[in-house]
Length: 517
Image 1 (cartoon, rainbow, N blue to C red):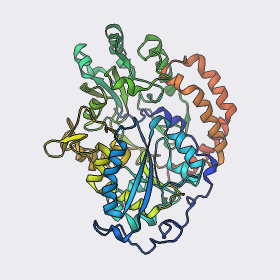
Image 2 (image 1 turned 90 degrees about the vertical axis):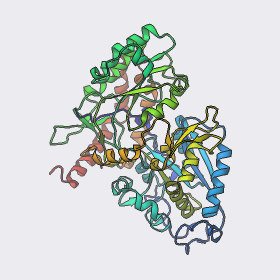
Image 3 (image 1 turned 180 degrees about the horizontal axis):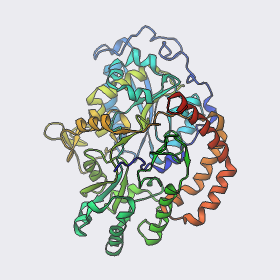
Image 4 (image 1 turned 180 degrees about the vertical axis):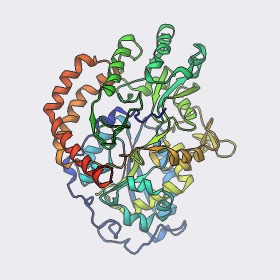
């Protein structure tokens, strides 16, 4: 069965528009990008590419600043930064100030930084902070010239479909953190409970089928949370059948039917709302934690207290990654879909700020992060012998008392440079690349929405969803009682104008792509 609609982080519903203080220059606010704009002297205009190790002295020293999200801030962050800077200084005579932000605070923090016009160099962009929206706000700058001159290795390594996915008005505005580029959603279940209650995984074809197992956990495991939906994550309400494709780049409530040759937009179809209803039911049954709307999943995952979690990317080797986050408990996966893709939906990338004092050196650094395996794994795993031990081949094992364990390799760069974690198959990256090339592709995955005409309405709609989303996705707000009032507020906030603008742009996209006359 083809499964085309999938779970996403709840914050994707509420990707906040970057405040207008960022400026409105559509070229990213830096028309000199790649032309010797480091500082004000143009000192690097004659530098052609990142120097080989040992030639870094040819460049003047600079400090770069890099913002990115982490699920948990790390105790040994400064120690790892020192080691990172030893490598970076030797390669490109630069140091980098690493600025991790708690993932739940990242959008708000970056909106504040960008609105204030703070000078910094690199920021993580993706599903929470969409590059196309930042382009319209003039918050990030184009990279084409910088890539050609300062990161030819990186440019050659990335498939063209990814560059296309990060292009706006014909110019590239982000560097993809290469990883799995397809989605396959389903459940991650602690093996000890699946074994104890003889769970028949073959019988689970849709989300609701897990309910009898949740009931067993609720009845017999008083210290365990049956289903791990919390205030910052949820199952997309449209993830239980194969009737729709989600339209990317919007607010995750627009769809097209798979069998509709007219590609007519669907807004809040009943099938989508059914999972809000399901969340309400499961909350009342006690399958969802009573304080899920205000608590964080990581606090309970780390203790092994969540029996069933929902995941949108059941990729090769995911069991090893999740085990590390799940109190060391082994897990099994139950896919509910085949592999599918939006082509490239720009979910995790790096962009260069329009205020970057050193855009050329920033690009050299990003080239290093994505091509220098030692640097990349230092950022991902910390210091060998102190935070992890090397095992056979490419395998590593984190120390039990490690003070640096982000476990978020996809935040930093291409995961194809990652050391292997215990339990990952040796061919995990080859299998991942195979999935990337064979996943079924969303026919409207290339659609990009220009939010400028309805920025005010989007801000108002986001504010309304902000009032209700945690309660709805965790079931703590009863859907049937809440939806009429919520929808009324959405209409007052500009829902109809927003839908009209989306429809207009989408219809033009269909015509431009030859999908509709």
